[in-house]
Length: 61
Image 1: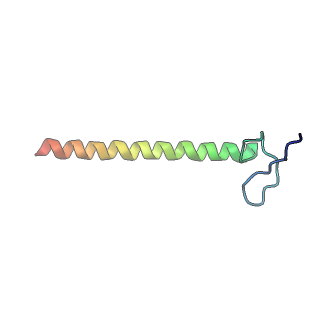
Image 2: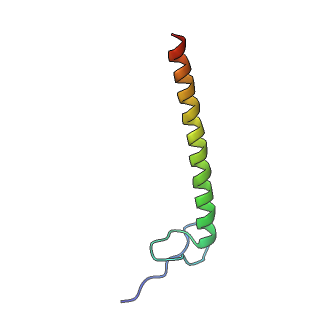
Image 3: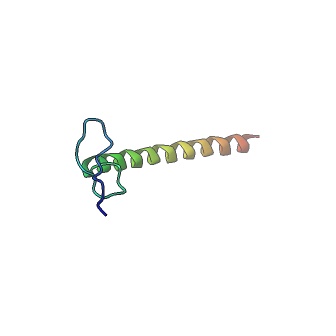
């Protein structure tokens, strides 16, 4: 049984993935993880602001 070589899913990238379950090569996997972490930080900040405004609205009533 031989495994099929997987290629990175980024356009114009022809590098092999790190393992059989990975979608991206190591370079693009790092970039994707950094992008994902930034998105999580922005979402957390937005939720915190929304909760602060909701709490302020309830306090004023």
